[in-house]
Image 1 (tube, one colour):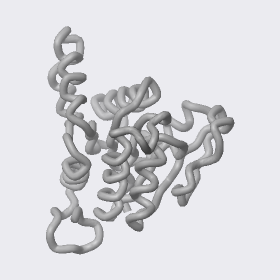
Image 2: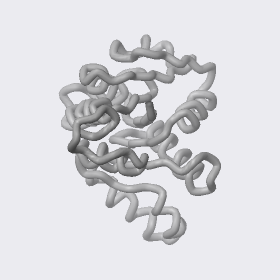
Image 3: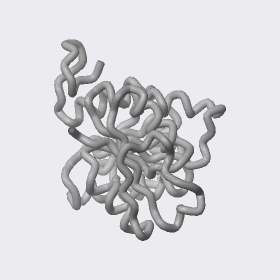
Image 4: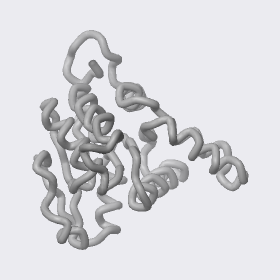
Length: 189
């Protein structure tokens, strides 16, 4: 079963407007027959985990010793991978996933995003779908094009999806899985 790493804010709350789309993303990925992997704690990690678990999907949480004071892995995690330091955690997230989705987040999310993007662009890991979910990412990517410091060819490794449904479709297509419609497990619905 392919695994999709989802990167996002640890401070997102259920009352935030971004929570529901991230939970829908988790549900959509699970319904497409994909496992979901995140940092395993709160915020967007809990939202995607909840959506995936409640839709019958497998949920992996990659926790780290330095964040243990924040509390245990969220209640929707099936499988916990505990790492000793942040570098091991990042390594696990970027090497054990078959696809990636980034949602709203802060510097931790950006760290995961840039590391993934760099590793994909230099072929330091196998090619994989990498989706930024939410229309706000278009302006963010454009800002990185403006100074012409990021070569245009590097933008082929990342795409923007406006909605959770678009993100799931992009991941499914990028993994070469059959398209939605005939209801078999492993397909987007």
